[in-house]
Image 1 (cartoon, helix red, strand yellow):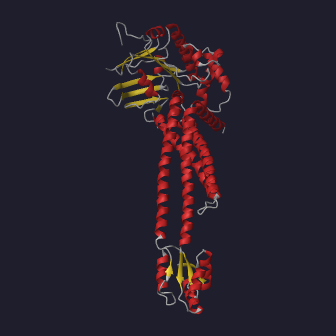
Image 2 (cartoon, chains in turn brown, yellow; image 1 turned 90 degrees about the vertical axis):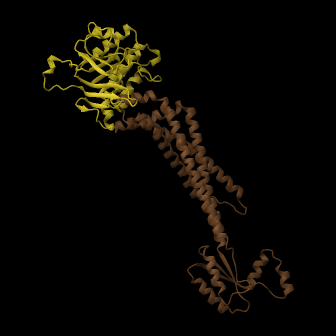
Length: 298
Length: 251
């Protein structure tokens, strides 16, 4: 235990000494690493929020309005409503009578009152508003509705059939691009840490040579550099965490009250920041391991 | 050419005695095709003091590097303390190297560390957490005559003093074998003589010493075992030898 603690202390002391001695290179590495982590963090957070917005749009789009002919009895409407409710593709069905349709149209600012006066009666049909479980069921349920005798044959249904593939394609593209860019950024940060450690190894080549000559194990030589890499990675993550959080809060406050307002997702923010810390430490460790490996093998 | 190995009459008959270091048909060829060593057979015993002599490029340093497996041999077998170095797995090399104390012509001291820290470094690396580290460092510095320089930095010392610090660092771990690769190469004759006397003193305490050198004066003055290498081959191995054989102009 005493040997282990002493070796650990030696490694910590050496890594801090080395960080200080190569302060310029070390800080440049930390800042670059921090910037890359900012990009990765912002991309992750941005993708998550954008996906949420799109999913919200998707849920709003997954509605089918089935117009009912005038003069159909409430019993027939209730039967059809029951048929739809028991369909496994359907989430919910609500009935909207002619008066409610009038109110709805009036609340959207439509000049419906003038039309009613001119026509002498309410021209808006009653409807069944169907929430479907998945957007791809819209087309299928539309056919079901059109085959029903109680449905208005002049304008049977209302929905946007094109929105589904568009939203899904947008989500797929965004996730794919962000995943690829993040991977590239991770590789870049790995190379940066590797080169920073190589510079550190070069600066301490005599020390390492002596260590090897007197019989130090590879891990004894490696540990100070691994700690230095992990230390640099975590410092970069602190930097990135502060910036990402700041940007996120700014975006939340700027979009508050707007049409597509972005809410503050505390849990996901914690996950992203924790991911930056773990990612920074792991990249730092792997970069250091690779940076020192060639020298140890020599 | 077959070279008779130097015998130690008093000890050679002891069946229990095994060489501390032995080379059996060892060769080293570099990737470029350059043959550095060829068919080396050697046996070095406990308490031996051996001069390894030869011109620059003869293969002295390569032999030292093969011994500590800083480089692998291309052929043959090398044994240290009965363990085969040539087939030793990499993970066991640190343990092998702890049997050696090694000094070089260029001292290899850490310029940002004091004399005491340089010497303690070997202990920190090989025996972290060892008790009485400072006492061991002070004692070793006393052996090399630098007990009053413990807080000095290497650049505040002369070349001879720096080499003594390197010797103290090699000695502080109490190695079984002391390897010195051209330790007097950068020193004037008087200082060189002081270093050699120190190595003789270390040998007198029971440590095997192998010193690679082309310092003719020192070898001729000390008159210990001499192994001469030329063109990567052992051309002479004799007890109480001289740098050159009688009548030779060069090795």
